[in-house]
Structures are given as structure tokens and as C-alpha cells.
Length: 163
Image (cartoon, rainbow, N blue to C red; front, top):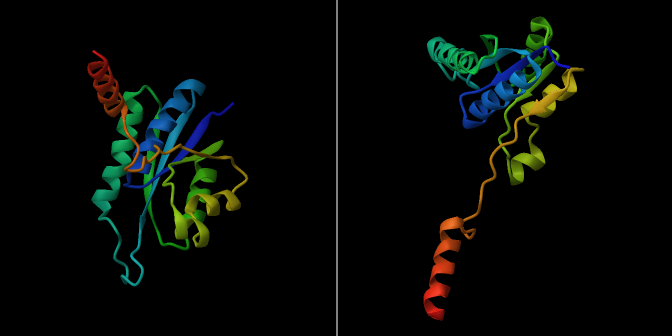
């Protein structure tokens, strides 16, 4: 079905999740992965980027190494972009790399960002005819939720009370 994925990553946990997701997809389909990372210019930074060139290259190299260690054919690049050109750069990179689909991580934005902001994923989806696959992000549990340890303690407490 898919022969080549473009994996768009950043330096956040969502980017790391995207690498794991793309690795699993590529192993299942036998596809190769092209890793793309955009080093963004700071708004009003007069040419200053979020990361140095070396830091941006390390993000790509780390993802490529992780994919290759999983047995996936991988290569990649980092490029410069700003907040307005990031989505078009991802879409163009997918076309130039000959990708069949684009894989991205998910940040699970809440409240106002979701209501008023347009995420990169939505902008990329509007700019390309390729399918955009989103790696599911881990659920964030609230403070009131209890893990399995709390359930074990509750059961132990009831068993000692009944004895």
C-alpha cells in the first residue's frame, strides 16, 4: 500500500512518538521513511532560529538512527522555515521525497489553542493531496484518576477488614 512515508518531526515528545509510530507502520508495510525536521525562525528574531544547525541535525540523525535500528530504511533532512512556511515546507518535502503519506505526531492541544489556533497538521492536510497520518498521543490522566496501585490498596484494605 505505502512505499515511502515522510515523517515530519520536532524536538518534542510528540516527535518521538511519531518516530515510533512511523517505525511500526514502515515495518508492517515494508516502506521506507524520509525524516523531515524544520528548524523554525524565532518570530521577531531577525534570522535567529529555535535550534542551532547542529541541534537540528541531531534531531534528524537521532530519528534516522532509531528507524534504522528497527530495521527500517531511512534518510532525512532538516530545513529552515518560519511559522508561515512550515506547513508548505512539509508538503513540498513530501512531494520531493516521493512520499505516499505524511506521518506526524500529535500534541493534543486543549481549550483555546484548539478553538482559535490552526495546528500544523490541519494546515498540512489542506496543502497536500497525500494522506496525513497522526500518531496517537498518550492520554493525559487527571489527578483524580487512580492507577492500578490504588486499586490494589483498596482491595487489600477490604480483605483485611473482612478477616
